[in-house]
Length: 447
Image 1 (cartoon, rainbow, N blue to C red):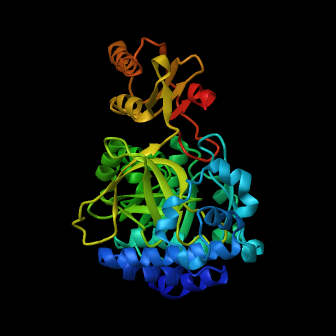
Image 2: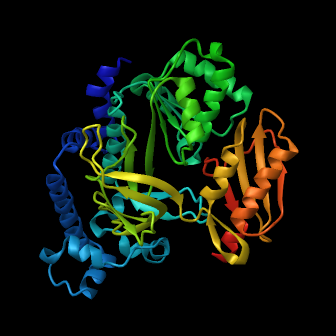
């Protein structure tokens, strides 16, 4: 189908038939991405006031919290009251979920769960308006690279939630009327890559979207067998759901020969940020309000999200479970949206070192990531604090290289704890479809 026809007519109609107003939200976001700082803050505060007034009228959980703060009328609600609300933890959602649902919307809510990378999936509810803004913010980020709605797109995806929906009718509809395909990310063997290369060669998508681990493997396969892709190259590769490591970005840039855009969001929090052409992560400030809780000396802290469009089950000052740094510099791309300095990773990405001290996974990941010819890896810490490092590689590592890795990790952990290596041909993804790089049974046990 012609891309302009899909973008102008079929996609908006498709979204309306599904009860979403994504196309209108997308147009609105394109109009606000270059607002002045004052105008953008005024827009945020107006949306926040309307959301909090809705909570006062229809959400018992928040009405009780507002009254506990001395609020007597909805006119008193706003940013100052928000700052005095206690941070909403996932355990709060589990306990009070029924009280958090907006009464008039209860019969129109959509049940969802998080991926459960922490080991404890969270059940929550969303609504069509929130989903419209979420999807529109994703589309807006791609438009910064010239990829408009209707552009041919392939998703490498591994979540059973999405893949289970890919029945014959939907595959037909998405392919022929929306220029959209989904390829399973659960198999990254060479046999699967050969099949995927044939699909990409024929369909020739402008956008490739998926987990960086999987797209990195596609790039490695393309590097070895460029003829399998028939000269096809994407115009944009967008990574999501996992940390995009520098070595992955460099290889994809080299092989794909196009920009690599990073996307940051979650099912529960919403679409939080998208990378621009200048390499900065711009916050979707019209959609979410972000805070950093108790920042460390480097400015990194737990990200606190208030989704400004989540009326069905509002999440005010919600601890998402990631660590980020906010940035305060002007971006040369021309967008005025605020930026994230860095997404450091999940606050649960820790191992337990000597004397029970916690060490962020980035320290160990950096040691393994820099090994030459590593295609895939996983660090597993067991209850006794010992570590196993799984390495998928093209060439053998010498004992000297492995000894250096072992020594560096033992220095980081503060003791000569046991560290062993194994060399599987492939490391399977987690149940959510993501390729987890660190699992600590010791940290999970103490949590």
